[in-house]
Length: 102
Image 1: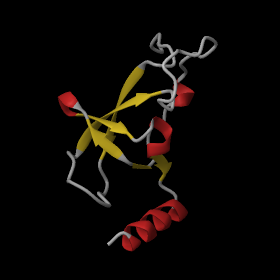
Image 2: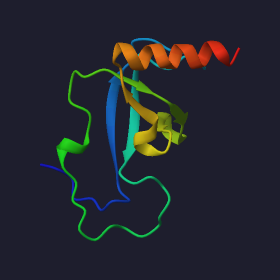
Image 3: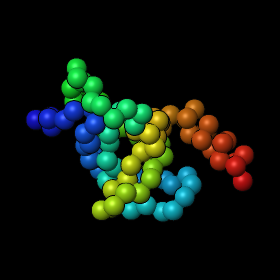
């Protein structure tokens, strides 16, 4: 059953690390805490309802821009801004941006 959350709630998901593009190494399996707002408001949206469709599909691949949290959890940058689908185009974009930052 889907958790009963408001738009300020969080759901934890476990990811398998495939590759670290930049930053510190992370565990082979890492727990990511997902929120469902862009952190710009502090009032829950009244008509919002959690659905599994808001979560990445099982088995899908993602580029995650993460910040470590307490308790071994990681948090994606500004929620959905910190999660890009791992398409060849997005991987190329990230690698290009990283090469410019050196």
